[in-house]
Image (cartoon, rainbow, N blue to C red; front, side):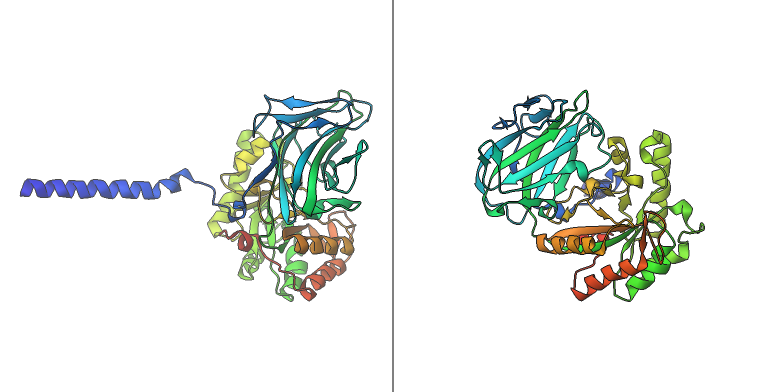
Length: 413
């Protein structure tokens, strides 16, 4: 009896350790939190490896079976150096793309030498060597810091596509991709995935501030409080309390008022050594974690600059990363390390911001409005006038636009 009793005790102890090791193992692996806004079903429009037709017969258009991430190959476009269009089209069975967002995966040998990256969705198709009735966007004007030969995955909202003719999202039957370059050697563009997803999730506007300037508290927090709004302040911890920047008391008061506090830096991370990059990220992460600030999982890339090494260094500490893509963020699907936003500069008209807001509500987007400094009188490009800032707040309040924080929207700590 005694021998069997000891066996049972040993078995219980063994099972105790097995259970608890498996329960805590996820802590040591440090996984990124799940993203409820990636739950939309991704529906491929094209895996890019078949069906594409050379449209202009200029430059080179073919399928590259070696450079790919999805499917069996990618659409490869190398424009001629004379500045003529080079591109291809894909005929589809008519599809209803109403209320959809889009995911695009691509890379380019030189973003600087590429002069146009045009994508269109046509509801009429190819007509007499042309196309009509289409929605389009030229990504060259919206993206920055695209590094050579690195795959990029972005999301697009219909809010950012312009309509030509009698375009109708309910009956899309053709997709067109084209590029232009007058540079020599001409850059090569690879497009590896064009997919769509439901974008009827949840609309919202986020008011964000980069750098932690003092005006984000003295002008913006105090003013926004009168409207019942909170935002996110991306701070640089070593700058807290420096002239012209918020101090720790300001930050704590913002948190008490429902604000998020995210991470930022004064360095261009691309040019830091791996050791210095890790150190800079660690300083910011440890400060935010120490105080358990809401919004501590969000990071704004300094100057919008990054490469894949920077993204990989940040991801274990900041799952949600924001470059400077001048795009609305579809709410139905988010690439966490490529969050879209609209940066507000001194010359951004209030009417433009209102149009962005209206489009975001129409298409169920998350619109992140990024400010730096707000001043009574502006001198620099990154300053926005208090008068115009208040006009934006008035519009949001009067029209009952949902103003949210990022931690609220994504359900993060």
